[in-house]
Image 1 (cartoon, rainbow, N blue to C red):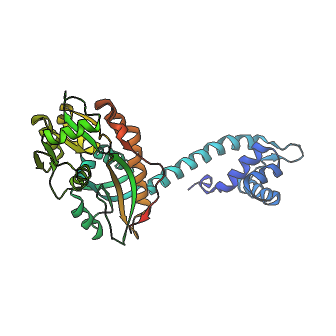
Image 2: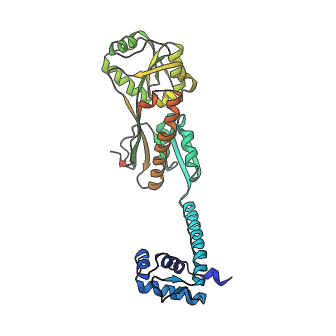
Length: 328
């Protein structure tokens, strides 16, 4: 091993700083040491190399011929040293694994883009999607680390949750149907056209039923199904209507192009999408997932949604800073 490999990088940094600042006092201020300590480090470097690096009789300090040669090499070496440290430290920041739970509407909408982004910084991303209640059980038993879900989880003292985004339900009708803008037109639609809704165990169905009861109207006909694809497809095929969140409409795929959507006249209905974790685990990892999710939504997915279904993204609201809180 050559002597060059034993050069003290701190001494090199002090040497370069003195050469750039041209006074011991200025270099000391910049580095955060005393002028005496700066001088001692320079002397130690000169002794190690066996050369004089500065002409000490000059003011400001000037480099000797050997000093000028070392200055060029030292700056290059210190820059490479910084690059190595940054590369190693950034690699160290990568997480080894993430076990992610995704609600069905997330998996069918922004899920692929989110997983692609997470794979850039996490070695292994394992994803489970499906209904929320089984995913909550998986979270409680620590089979997954983080859950993205629209279900309003309650009474779980071990869990913390954070709002990822909120979406306003939209009224969906067959494409080309007369626009449903007024409350009167909505009331007429309810009693004249079939309602296509989710099965009774769906939290989206529960919210929609609550709104209909507040209107005092009972749909003339209704059909209940389990998937967004069927909801939207049957709205088109049966000339019916439905109340669904925008991400569900997107998840319906090609069927979404066969319907029109409107704000619910005179009413509002909102679904909140949560990120949920156990209180004692994965704080940094879940924070990272949340920030990346919001970035994917605002910078990529909603742009794509607006391009393919103009106007739908205005029903989606993504808040700013993440702040976890316990579930009461």
